[in-house]
Image (cartoon, rainbow, N blue to C red; front, side, top):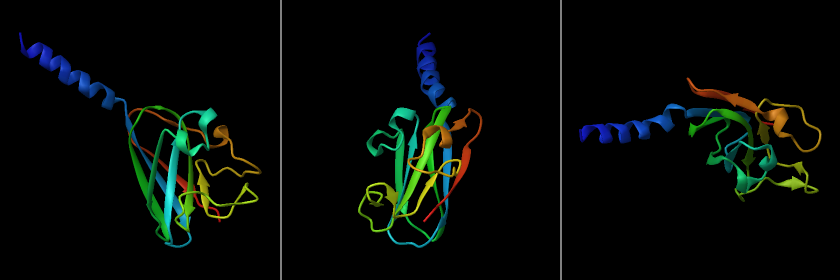
Length: 140
């Protein structure tokens, strides 16, 4: 009878990962390999574009062409992704007049934006079953 509680505990550990998926984010069209790229995944429209409130974030060395980052254990739901090419490696997206990006950036769904991008324009679904793969076209 001691095996039953151990088996139950083992199954409880497996259940959360059964519903978590991988998100593969490819940044396409990176112009050069200076600096790094930063990718943030948002799960809440209220926190979209707030760096410190992203569901998950990663950085990687910039490479001319394309870079893919993989986020593990992402629960099914609606998400939006914002990425930028931190060309001067200062840890933030540089902007002219505090609004217009002066470094490359990309958004999930690659929407055409005038003004600040919205969560809804970039939102996509992650469903259980297999990894989700998205490609962001970098704009400079």
